[in-house]
Length: 286
Image (cartoon, rainbow, N blue to C red; front, side, top):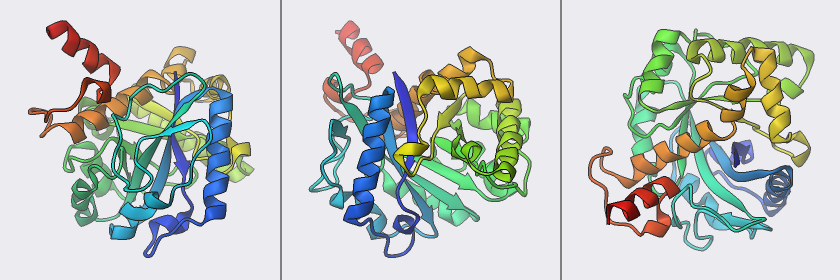
């Protein structure tokens, strides 16, 4: 079961007064359908937040059209969540989730992320400096499932192993987007440098591959991406896990975080809405 947890919404959607037009939704729907054809079972539509969270960043999902061969994790009329993020879908279908990525330059932006629970299935942060990278990795903000670094640009900080391993200990994943690897030569070189730094810092653990594909043509088949790991000295098994088991673990982290009170006391919910592993344990306990 393969996952692509980053199919971006238009950049304007994450700015003040953000909106997605019907033409833009149609292009996103084509990308989702192509992901299904290529063999992905779960994708996440990603809104990248520039600045402060506003009501339109929560209501943007109310304008979602009907997706062919897809099961949405939210009700199109109300925006309310429907089922667990890892809930299985029927054969030939694809599960579509909602993801928020907040570009964070100061700590106050991170603290506001707690208010998005229920409106997003996955929350990621993209730190822009050393201090925010540390905060993203050390648990300063509860509502973080993925640390997303800009793979196509030179960083003004270093992804140190001592910092990154704090995120891994908390169950937070690090993301490697492959779309910059398909761009021009300069961007590709920067991508190799950045992605290799992530692999070194994590030793290949808790890394997830995502596409960041804005068009259907930018998507690649899962095994093509797994082979891309060789460029980064990421062995085949670890590279494949970055598309499957690691991505599922990121969703489990998000489910646990949003469905429990600091992962200690869980409110009642139906077994059908639980991840498969939790549902199995519940049945065995009866």
